[in-house]
Length: 237
Image 1 (tube, rainbow, N blue to C red):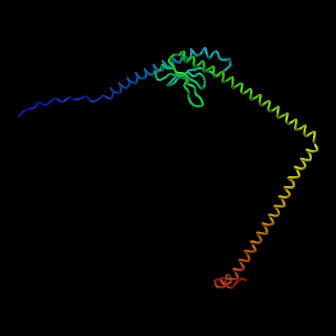
Image 2 (spheres, rainbow, N blue to C red; image 1 turned 90 degrees about the horizontal axis):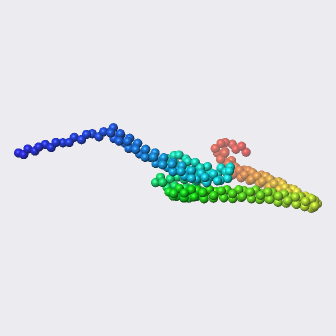
Image 3 (cartoon, rainbow, N blue to C red; image 1 turned 30 degrees about the horizontal axis):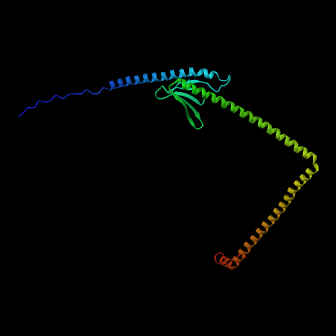
């Protein structure tokens, strides 16, 4: 009979939850530091772009509050130029992306890792906005001028009409009298029609009542009196 040696069994140590939590905290701290470093790098790149764009914005007309560059801090920092345009960085944290919000959605104006190209795109954008503002002001001025001309034309027509009425008072008076007599005639005819309609309605109502009375009297004479006598007693009439 062969005797087999019992193989020694290896006892595994139970997993340590505290050690796992410690490792998770270390990994989270390392990721947080990496994200903080990336966000800081984004802010630095946007600050460099702001310094490069500032001389262009300083050349805009004095007192114009159309452009107000500033960096908005957050999960994804952005450099705003005005209320509808901004620059942020792509997923690689190196590529500048210049956007503008329009009525048809957000439009990408320029995208590049070279800061000079973005500055040139922003310069062209500022120029277009200034031209659009000038055109809008000119349009408002033309609209106001057209309104003044319209008022002047209306006043001229009113004065001409008053002069024509003053030159022919008899004709105007006759037309006014004729116009006043026409409504009076129509109101008299309407009154006569209303009275005639009322009489017809009254006559029709009386006729209907008479017919109903005759029908009731005939029914009483045919079978109503007999039914009364048979079930109630002596007939009242």
